[in-house]
Image 1 (tube, rainbow, N blue to C red):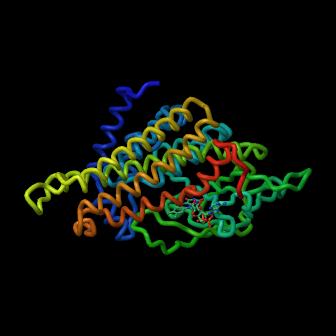
Image 2 (cartoon, helix red, strand yellow):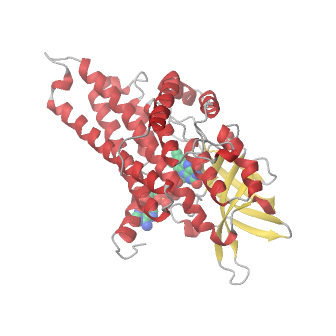
Length: 385
Ligand SMILES: Cc1cc2nc3c(=O)[nH]c(=O)nc-3n(C[C@H](O)[C@H](O)[C@H](O)COP(=O)(O)OP(=O)(O)OC[C@H]3O[C@@H](n4cnc5c(N)ncnc54)[C@H](O)[C@@H]3O)c2cc1C
Protein backbone atom coordinates (compact mmCIF):
# COMPACT_ATOMS: atom_id res chain seq x y z
CA UNK A 1 0.00 0.00 0.00
CA UNK A 2 1.43 3.35 -0.99
CA UNK A 3 -0.12 6.62 0.07
CA UNK A 4 2.26 8.77 -1.93
CA UNK A 5 1.19 9.72 -5.40
CA UNK A 6 3.70 9.22 -8.21
CA UNK A 7 5.50 12.17 -9.81
CA UNK A 8 3.20 11.78 -12.86
CA UNK A 9 0.09 11.87 -10.70
CA UNK A 10 1.30 14.94 -8.84
CA UNK A 11 2.20 16.64 -12.11
CA UNK A 12 -1.27 15.82 -13.46
CA UNK A 13 -2.89 17.25 -10.32
CA UNK A 14 -0.87 20.46 -10.63
CA UNK A 15 -1.57 20.85 -14.36
CA UNK A 16 -5.32 20.35 -13.89
CA UNK A 17 -5.37 22.72 -10.90
CA UNK A 18 -3.67 25.29 -13.11
CA UNK A 19 -6.29 24.86 -15.84
CA UNK A 20 -9.14 25.00 -13.31
CA UNK A 21 -7.65 28.12 -11.76
CA UNK A 22 -7.76 29.87 -15.14
CA UNK A 23 -11.54 29.27 -15.38
CA UNK A 24 -12.75 29.07 -11.77
CA UNK A 25 -16.14 29.26 -10.19
CA UNK A 26 -16.98 32.64 -11.75
CA UNK A 27 -16.88 31.07 -15.21
CA UNK A 28 -18.89 28.03 -14.06
CA UNK A 29 -21.61 30.10 -12.38
CA UNK A 30 -21.94 32.69 -15.12
CA UNK A 31 -22.28 29.96 -17.78
CA UNK A 32 -24.87 28.16 -15.65
CA UNK A 33 -26.89 31.31 -14.92
CA UNK A 34 -26.74 32.50 -18.52
CA UNK A 35 -27.86 29.13 -19.93
CA UNK A 36 -24.37 28.50 -21.36
CA UNK A 37 -22.14 25.45 -21.30
CA UNK A 38 -18.59 24.78 -20.20
CA UNK A 39 -17.45 24.24 -23.80
CA UNK A 40 -14.18 26.20 -23.65
CA UNK A 41 -13.04 24.41 -20.49
CA UNK A 42 -14.18 21.03 -21.82
CA UNK A 43 -12.33 21.52 -25.10
CA UNK A 44 -9.16 22.75 -23.47
CA UNK A 45 -9.21 19.87 -20.99
CA UNK A 46 -9.68 17.51 -23.95
CA UNK A 47 -6.77 18.98 -25.87
CA UNK A 48 -4.53 18.65 -22.84
CA UNK A 49 -5.40 14.95 -22.63
CA UNK A 50 -7.31 15.24 -19.34
CA UNK A 51 -10.77 14.04 -20.48
CA UNK A 52 -9.52 10.71 -21.80
CA UNK A 53 -6.65 10.13 -19.41
CA UNK A 54 -8.16 6.75 -18.39
CA UNK A 55 -8.80 5.46 -21.92
CA UNK A 56 -6.41 3.18 -23.83
CA UNK A 57 -3.55 4.91 -25.67
CA UNK A 58 -4.33 2.81 -28.73
CA UNK A 59 -7.63 4.67 -29.04
CA UNK A 60 -6.37 8.16 -28.33
CA UNK A 61 -6.51 8.05 -24.53
CA UNK A 62 -3.82 8.66 -21.95
CA UNK A 63 -3.41 4.99 -21.01
CA UNK A 64 -3.70 5.75 -17.28
CA UNK A 65 -6.53 4.67 -14.97
CA UNK A 66 -9.62 5.70 -13.10
CA UNK A 67 -7.37 7.04 -10.34
CA UNK A 68 -5.99 9.64 -12.74
CA UNK A 69 -9.42 10.48 -14.15
CA UNK A 70 -10.61 11.08 -10.59
CA UNK A 71 -7.63 13.40 -10.03
CA UNK A 72 -8.77 15.48 -13.01
CA UNK A 73 -12.34 15.86 -11.80
CA UNK A 74 -11.38 16.42 -8.16
CA UNK A 75 -8.98 19.23 -9.11
CA UNK A 76 -11.44 20.92 -11.48
CA UNK A 77 -14.17 20.76 -8.82
CA UNK A 78 -11.70 22.09 -6.23
CA UNK A 79 -11.20 25.07 -8.55
CA UNK A 80 -15.00 25.56 -8.60
CA UNK A 81 -15.54 24.32 -12.15
CA UNK A 82 -16.17 20.57 -12.05
CA UNK A 83 -17.19 18.99 -15.36
CA UNK A 84 -20.22 16.78 -14.66
CA UNK A 85 -20.06 15.15 -18.08
CA UNK A 86 -16.70 13.59 -17.12
CA UNK A 87 -18.66 11.33 -14.77
CA UNK A 88 -20.59 10.12 -17.79
CA UNK A 89 -18.64 10.34 -21.05
CA UNK A 90 -15.12 9.01 -20.32
CA UNK A 91 -15.93 7.28 -17.01
CA UNK A 92 -19.10 5.30 -17.73
CA UNK A 93 -19.39 5.20 -21.51
CA UNK A 94 -15.67 5.23 -22.32
CA UNK A 95 -14.97 2.49 -19.78
CA UNK A 96 -17.78 0.22 -20.99
CA UNK A 97 -16.80 0.61 -24.65
CA UNK A 98 -13.09 0.17 -23.90
CA UNK A 99 -13.73 -3.00 -21.91
CA UNK A 100 -16.55 -4.62 -23.82
CA UNK A 101 -16.92 -2.98 -27.23
CA UNK A 102 -15.82 -4.53 -30.50
CA UNK A 103 -12.68 -3.15 -32.10
CA UNK A 104 -14.87 -1.25 -34.54
CA UNK A 105 -16.92 0.31 -31.73
CA UNK A 106 -13.72 1.30 -29.95
CA UNK A 107 -12.31 2.87 -33.14
CA UNK A 108 -15.56 4.67 -33.71
CA UNK A 109 -16.18 6.11 -30.23
CA UNK A 110 -13.08 6.17 -28.04
CA UNK A 111 -10.81 8.65 -29.88
CA UNK A 112 -13.50 11.33 -29.91
CA UNK A 113 -14.60 10.65 -26.33
CA UNK A 114 -10.94 10.85 -25.27
CA UNK A 115 -10.23 14.09 -27.11
CA UNK A 116 -13.46 15.61 -25.81
CA UNK A 117 -14.60 16.38 -29.35
CA UNK A 118 -17.63 14.17 -28.76
CA UNK A 119 -19.66 13.54 -25.61
CA UNK A 120 -21.66 10.43 -24.86
CA UNK A 121 -24.44 10.82 -22.28
CA UNK A 122 -25.79 7.90 -20.24
CA UNK A 123 -29.44 6.99 -19.72
CA UNK A 124 -30.58 4.44 -17.17
CA UNK A 125 -33.13 6.27 -14.97
CA UNK A 126 -36.78 5.96 -15.97
CA UNK A 127 -39.87 7.80 -14.74
CA UNK A 128 -41.51 4.67 -13.31
CA UNK A 129 -38.41 2.74 -12.31
CA UNK A 130 -36.17 5.28 -10.48
CA UNK A 131 -33.83 3.48 -8.10
CA UNK A 132 -35.28 0.11 -9.08
CA UNK A 133 -33.38 -0.83 -12.23
CA UNK A 134 -35.19 -4.19 -12.33
CA UNK A 135 -38.26 -2.27 -13.38
CA UNK A 136 -36.78 -0.70 -16.50
CA UNK A 137 -39.30 -0.83 -19.33
CA UNK A 138 -37.21 0.54 -22.21
CA UNK A 139 -37.14 -2.45 -24.52
CA UNK A 140 -35.06 -3.38 -27.54
CA UNK A 141 -36.59 -5.80 -30.01
CA UNK A 142 -34.69 -7.46 -32.83
CA UNK A 143 -36.05 -6.84 -36.31
CA UNK A 144 -33.86 -8.58 -38.86
CA UNK A 145 -30.45 -6.94 -38.66
CA UNK A 146 -31.69 -4.00 -36.64
CA UNK A 147 -32.80 -3.17 -33.12
CA UNK A 148 -35.95 -1.21 -32.37
CA UNK A 149 -35.99 0.67 -29.07
CA UNK A 150 -39.01 2.04 -27.23
CA UNK A 151 -39.13 3.71 -23.85
CA UNK A 152 -38.68 6.81 -21.69
CA UNK A 153 -35.74 8.09 -19.66
CA UNK A 154 -35.63 10.91 -17.13
CA UNK A 155 -33.01 13.27 -15.61
CA UNK A 156 -30.47 12.42 -18.30
CA UNK A 157 -27.62 14.94 -18.12
CA UNK A 158 -26.08 16.73 -21.07
CA UNK A 159 -28.12 15.23 -23.92
CA UNK A 160 -28.00 18.61 -25.71
CA UNK A 161 -24.19 18.41 -25.76
CA UNK A 162 -24.01 14.75 -26.69
CA UNK A 163 -23.50 13.01 -30.00
CA UNK A 164 -25.06 9.87 -28.55
CA UNK A 165 -26.59 8.45 -25.39
CA UNK A 166 -25.63 5.06 -23.99
CA UNK A 167 -29.09 3.72 -23.24
CA UNK A 168 -29.74 0.92 -20.79
CA UNK A 169 -32.60 -1.07 -22.27
CA UNK A 170 -33.81 -4.62 -21.98
CA UNK A 171 -34.02 -7.40 -24.53
CA UNK A 172 -36.19 -10.50 -24.33
CA UNK A 173 -34.32 -13.77 -24.02
CA UNK A 174 -35.17 -15.81 -27.12
CA UNK A 175 -35.75 -19.00 -25.10
CA UNK A 176 -37.29 -17.84 -21.81
CA UNK A 177 -38.78 -14.49 -22.85
CA UNK A 178 -37.18 -13.03 -19.68
CA UNK A 179 -36.05 -9.44 -20.00
CA UNK A 180 -32.31 -8.82 -19.65
CA UNK A 181 -30.45 -5.50 -19.61
CA UNK A 182 -28.60 -4.46 -22.76
CA UNK A 183 -26.62 -1.35 -23.66
CA UNK A 184 -27.10 0.63 -26.86
CA UNK A 185 -25.22 3.61 -28.27
CA UNK A 186 -28.03 5.80 -29.62
CA UNK A 187 -27.00 8.83 -31.73
CA UNK A 188 -29.13 11.78 -30.64
CA UNK A 189 -30.11 12.51 -34.26
CA UNK A 190 -31.73 9.09 -34.82
CA UNK A 191 -35.34 9.32 -36.01
CA UNK A 192 -37.74 8.54 -33.15
CA UNK A 193 -35.31 9.84 -30.52
CA UNK A 194 -36.37 13.13 -28.98
CA UNK A 195 -35.69 15.00 -25.75
CA UNK A 196 -37.07 17.82 -23.65
CA UNK A 197 -35.24 19.82 -20.97
CA UNK A 198 -36.51 19.53 -17.39
CA UNK A 199 -36.81 22.78 -15.44
CA UNK A 200 -34.31 22.05 -12.69
CA UNK A 201 -33.96 24.28 -9.62
CA UNK A 202 -30.17 23.97 -9.41
CA UNK A 203 -27.43 26.27 -10.77
CA UNK A 204 -25.59 23.85 -13.04
CA UNK A 205 -24.43 24.33 -16.64
CA UNK A 206 -25.32 20.73 -17.52
CA UNK A 207 -29.02 20.42 -18.19
CA UNK A 208 -31.19 17.37 -17.46
CA UNK A 209 -33.60 15.88 -19.99
CA UNK A 210 -36.60 13.69 -20.47
CA UNK A 211 -35.95 11.28 -23.35
CA UNK A 212 -38.51 9.73 -25.65
CA UNK A 213 -37.59 6.67 -27.67
CA UNK A 214 -40.36 5.84 -30.13
CA UNK A 215 -39.48 3.05 -32.55
CA UNK A 216 -35.84 4.11 -32.64
CA UNK A 217 -34.26 1.85 -35.24
CA UNK A 218 -30.56 1.10 -34.80
CA UNK A 219 -28.05 -1.03 -36.68
CA UNK A 220 -26.92 -4.30 -35.10
CA UNK A 221 -23.62 -2.82 -33.96
CA UNK A 222 -25.38 -0.24 -31.76
CA UNK A 223 -25.48 -2.97 -29.13
CA UNK A 224 -22.40 -2.46 -26.98
CA UNK A 225 -20.79 -5.60 -25.68
CA UNK A 226 -22.48 -8.90 -25.14
CA UNK A 227 -26.26 -9.16 -24.92
CA UNK A 228 -25.93 -11.94 -22.34
CA UNK A 229 -23.54 -10.19 -19.97
CA UNK A 230 -24.87 -6.67 -19.89
CA UNK A 231 -25.34 -6.57 -16.11
CA UNK A 232 -21.66 -7.23 -15.54
CA UNK A 233 -20.78 -4.66 -18.19
CA UNK A 234 -23.14 -2.14 -16.66
CA UNK A 235 -21.51 -2.46 -13.25
CA UNK A 236 -18.10 -2.12 -14.84
CA UNK A 237 -19.28 1.36 -15.86
CA UNK A 238 -21.25 2.23 -12.72
CA UNK A 239 -18.30 1.71 -10.38
CA UNK A 240 -16.29 4.43 -12.19
CA UNK A 241 -19.42 6.60 -12.10
CA UNK A 242 -19.52 6.34 -8.31
CA UNK A 243 -15.82 7.04 -7.94
CA UNK A 244 -16.17 10.09 -10.19
CA UNK A 245 -19.24 11.35 -8.30
CA UNK A 246 -17.13 11.04 -5.15
CA UNK A 247 -14.26 12.94 -6.82
CA UNK A 248 -16.58 15.78 -7.80
CA UNK A 249 -18.03 15.94 -4.27
CA UNK A 250 -14.62 15.88 -2.58
CA UNK A 251 -13.36 18.60 -4.93
CA UNK A 252 -16.42 20.76 -4.28
CA UNK A 253 -15.90 20.28 -0.54
CA UNK A 254 -12.28 21.40 -0.89
CA UNK A 255 -13.41 24.48 -2.82
CA UNK A 256 -15.86 25.44 -0.07
CA UNK A 257 -13.41 24.73 2.75
CA UNK A 258 -10.72 26.88 1.11
CA UNK A 259 -13.17 29.76 0.91
CA UNK A 260 -14.18 29.29 4.55
CA UNK A 261 -10.59 29.14 5.81
CA UNK A 262 -9.40 32.26 4.04
CA UNK A 263 -12.49 34.12 5.22
CA UNK A 264 -12.15 32.90 8.82
CA UNK A 265 -8.48 33.96 8.91
CA UNK A 266 -9.29 37.53 7.90
CA UNK A 267 -12.77 38.41 9.08
CA UNK A 268 -12.64 40.14 12.46
CA UNK A 269 -15.78 41.25 14.25
CA UNK A 270 -14.46 41.13 17.84
CA UNK A 271 -10.75 41.43 18.68
CA UNK A 272 -9.52 38.35 16.82
CA UNK A 273 -10.29 36.74 13.45
CA UNK A 274 -13.45 34.62 13.63
CA UNK A 275 -11.32 31.52 12.93
CA UNK A 276 -9.81 31.92 16.39
CA UNK A 277 -13.16 30.99 17.93
CA UNK A 278 -13.34 27.26 18.53
CA UNK A 279 -17.05 27.36 17.79
CA UNK A 280 -16.04 28.01 14.20
CA UNK A 281 -12.60 26.36 14.03
CA UNK A 282 -13.65 22.93 15.31
CA UNK A 283 -16.46 22.30 12.84
CA UNK A 284 -14.07 23.32 10.04
CA UNK A 285 -11.43 20.91 11.37
CA UNK A 286 -14.13 18.24 11.58
CA UNK A 287 -15.19 18.59 7.95
CA UNK A 288 -11.53 18.61 6.88
CA UNK A 289 -11.19 15.17 8.53
CA UNK A 290 -14.41 13.91 6.94
CA UNK A 291 -13.34 15.09 3.50
CA UNK A 292 -9.93 13.41 3.85
CA UNK A 293 -11.60 10.15 4.91
CA UNK A 294 -13.96 10.26 1.95
CA UNK A 295 -11.06 10.99 -0.36
CA UNK A 296 -9.12 8.05 0.99
CA UNK A 297 -12.04 5.70 0.26
CA UNK A 298 -12.40 7.21 -3.21
CA UNK A 299 -8.70 6.58 -3.88
CA UNK A 300 -9.01 3.02 -2.55
CA UNK A 301 -11.99 2.38 -4.85
CA UNK A 302 -10.17 3.78 -7.87
CA UNK A 303 -7.03 1.76 -7.07
CA UNK A 304 -9.01 -1.48 -6.68
CA UNK A 305 -10.80 -0.76 -9.93
CA UNK A 306 -7.54 -0.11 -11.77
CA UNK A 307 -6.16 -3.37 -10.36
CA UNK A 308 -9.09 -5.21 -11.96
CA UNK A 309 -10.91 -6.21 -8.78
CA UNK A 310 -14.47 -5.25 -9.78
CA UNK A 311 -16.13 -6.82 -6.73
CA UNK A 312 -13.98 -5.11 -4.10
CA UNK A 313 -14.08 -1.90 -6.17
CA UNK A 314 -17.90 -2.08 -6.15
CA UNK A 315 -18.09 -2.07 -2.36
CA UNK A 316 -15.46 0.65 -2.04
CA UNK A 317 -17.01 2.81 -4.79
CA UNK A 318 -20.41 2.72 -3.08
CA UNK A 319 -18.86 3.59 0.28
CA UNK A 320 -16.77 6.36 -1.31
CA UNK A 321 -19.80 7.92 -3.00
CA UNK A 322 -21.73 7.77 0.30
CA UNK A 323 -18.89 9.25 2.34
CA UNK A 324 -18.04 11.96 -0.20
CA UNK A 325 -21.65 13.08 -0.54
CA UNK A 326 -22.11 13.33 3.22
CA UNK A 327 -18.73 15.04 3.78
CA UNK A 328 -19.25 17.57 0.99
CA UNK A 329 -22.76 18.46 2.16
CA UNK A 330 -21.51 19.07 5.72
CA UNK A 331 -18.47 20.97 4.42
CA UNK A 332 -20.40 23.35 2.19
CA UNK A 333 -22.97 23.88 4.95
CA UNK A 334 -20.24 24.67 7.48
CA UNK A 335 -18.43 26.93 5.01
CA UNK A 336 -21.69 28.85 4.63
CA UNK A 337 -21.83 29.24 8.42
CA UNK A 338 -18.25 30.55 8.46
CA UNK A 339 -19.01 33.24 5.90
CA UNK A 340 -22.23 34.41 7.48
CA UNK A 341 -24.25 36.68 5.20
CA UNK A 342 -21.47 36.80 2.61
CA UNK A 343 -22.06 33.10 1.92
CA UNK A 344 -25.39 33.98 0.36
CA UNK A 345 -23.86 36.29 -2.25
CA UNK A 346 -22.92 35.26 -5.77
CA UNK A 347 -19.37 36.45 -5.09
CA UNK A 348 -18.62 33.30 -3.07
CA UNK A 349 -20.87 30.80 -4.88
CA UNK A 350 -21.53 28.71 -1.79
CA UNK A 351 -25.31 28.90 -1.54
CA UNK A 352 -25.82 27.40 -4.99
CA UNK A 353 -23.04 24.89 -4.37
CA UNK A 354 -24.99 23.53 -1.41
CA UNK A 355 -27.81 22.45 -3.73
CA UNK A 356 -25.29 20.90 -6.12
CA UNK A 357 -23.51 18.82 -3.51
CA UNK A 358 -26.86 17.96 -1.96
CA UNK A 359 -27.70 16.32 -5.29
CA UNK A 360 -24.91 13.80 -4.71
CA UNK A 361 -26.89 12.30 -1.83
CA UNK A 362 -29.51 11.37 -4.48
CA UNK A 363 -27.59 10.83 -7.73
CA UNK A 364 -26.14 8.84 -9.37
CA UNK A 365 -27.28 6.42 -6.69
CA UNK A 366 -29.08 7.48 -3.54
CA UNK A 367 -27.80 7.26 0.00
CA UNK A 368 -30.50 4.72 0.84
CA UNK A 369 -29.65 2.41 -2.05
CA UNK A 370 -26.01 2.43 -0.93
CA UNK A 371 -27.08 1.59 2.61
CA UNK A 372 -29.21 -1.23 1.15
CA UNK A 373 -26.17 -2.48 -0.77
CA UNK A 374 -23.85 -2.36 2.24
CA UNK A 375 -26.43 -3.97 4.54
CA UNK A 376 -26.92 -6.81 2.09
CA UNK A 377 -23.48 -7.34 0.57
CA UNK A 378 -21.05 -6.16 3.24
CA UNK A 379 -23.05 -7.15 6.32
CA UNK A 380 -24.84 -10.18 4.92
CA UNK A 381 -28.23 -8.98 6.12
CA UNK A 382 -31.42 -10.06 4.32
CA UNK A 383 -32.40 -8.01 1.29
CA UNK A 384 -34.91 -5.45 2.56
CA UNK A 385 -36.60 -4.36 -0.63
C1 LIG B 1 -28.82 16.52 -11.41
C2 LIG B 1 -29.15 15.11 -11.76
C3 LIG B 1 -28.49 14.49 -12.83
C4 LIG B 1 -28.80 13.18 -13.19
N1 LIG B 1 -28.18 12.63 -14.28
C5 LIG B 1 -28.53 11.37 -14.68
C6 LIG B 1 -27.98 10.83 -15.89
O1 LIG B 1 -27.17 11.46 -16.57
N2 LIG B 1 -28.39 9.58 -16.28
C7 LIG B 1 -29.29 8.85 -15.55
O2 LIG B 1 -29.62 7.74 -15.96
N3 LIG B 1 -29.85 9.36 -14.40
C8 LIG B 1 -29.49 10.60 -13.96
N4 LIG B 1 -30.05 11.13 -12.81
C9 LIG B 1 -31.06 10.36 -12.08
C10 LIG B 1 -30.57 9.82 -10.74
O3 LIG B 1 -29.66 8.77 -10.95
C11 LIG B 1 -31.81 9.41 -9.94
O4 LIG B 1 -32.47 10.60 -9.57
C12 LIG B 1 -31.47 8.57 -8.73
O5 LIG B 1 -30.97 7.32 -9.12
C13 LIG B 1 -32.70 8.34 -7.83
O6 LIG B 1 -33.81 7.90 -8.57
P1 LIG B 1 -35.21 8.69 -8.44
O7 LIG B 1 -34.96 10.13 -8.58
O8 LIG B 1 -36.19 8.05 -9.36
O9 LIG B 1 -35.68 8.42 -6.94
P2 LIG B 1 -36.62 7.25 -6.42
O10 LIG B 1 -36.11 5.92 -6.85
O11 LIG B 1 -38.02 7.59 -6.70
O12 LIG B 1 -36.35 7.38 -4.85
C14 LIG B 1 -36.89 8.45 -4.06
C15 LIG B 1 -36.39 8.27 -2.64
O13 LIG B 1 -36.79 7.00 -2.13
C16 LIG B 1 -35.65 6.29 -1.66
N5 LIG B 1 -35.82 4.86 -1.92
C17 LIG B 1 -36.22 4.26 -3.08
N6 LIG B 1 -36.19 2.93 -2.92
C18 LIG B 1 -35.78 2.67 -1.66
C19 LIG B 1 -35.55 1.48 -0.89
N7 LIG B 1 -35.71 0.27 -1.41
N8 LIG B 1 -35.09 1.60 0.38
C20 LIG B 1 -34.91 2.83 0.92
N9 LIG B 1 -35.11 3.98 0.28
C21 LIG B 1 -35.54 3.90 -1.02
C22 LIG B 1 -34.48 6.85 -2.46
O14 LIG B 1 -33.26 6.65 -1.80
C23 LIG B 1 -34.86 8.32 -2.57
O15 LIG B 1 -34.44 8.99 -1.40
C24 LIG B 1 -29.75 12.45 -12.43
C25 LIG B 1 -30.41 13.06 -11.36
C26 LIG B 1 -30.12 14.37 -11.03
C27 LIG B 1 -30.86 15.00 -9.88
